[in-house]
Length: 203
Image (cartoon, rainbow, N blue to C red; front, side):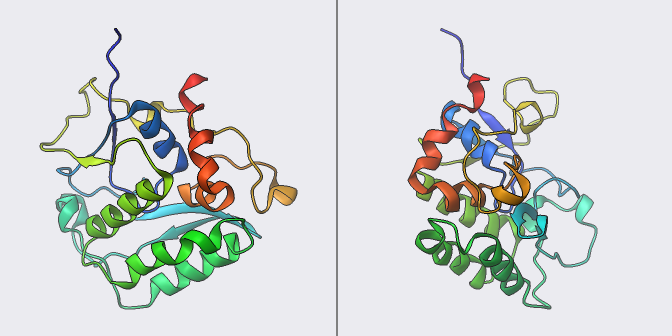
C-alpha cells in the first residue's frame, strides 16, 4: 500500500481553500511551529474577492526583526482597529453569499478577543474553520522544525490551487476565481464545501 504523506504548511491567516482540500483528502495536516517568521506567503495575509476584484487582507504586526523571530513569538499590532476593517471587507465581499450569516460571527469573534500573537490568532481560526468544514482530522503543530529538503510531506507549492468551479458571489463579473481564502468556499458552499474538496488531488 502506498504511504500517504501528510500536508505540511506554515501557519496562515484564513488559509487558502486548497490547503483545506488537500488536508481533508490526506487526513493529516501538520503546521510548522518551529520556523522563524518569514515575510510573504500567507502567515499574516489572506485573499478574498469583492465587488472590485481580488483583495488581500493583512494583519499588521509589531515592528521588529520578524525574520529572525520564532513564528510563535511574532506579535500583532493593535494600534488601529484593523479587525474591524477586515470584518467590513469580508462583509462587503460575502454578505450576500448563502452561508455568510451562519458562520461569520463565530469567526469574527476570534479576532475581537485580540490574541497577542499571529500564531495564536491563526491557530484559533484554523481550528474553528476545520470544525465548521468537518475536516477528517484537525491540524496539528509540528514537534520539531521540518527541514525544507525533507521529502516526507506534501507542500503547498506542489498542490493544484483550483477547486471544482462553484458559484461565487461575483462570478457574473469575474468568472470563477481560484486560489482564494477558504472563506470563499465556506460562505458560498457551506456544508457542500467538503464535497468540493474531495476532488482536488484527483487531477
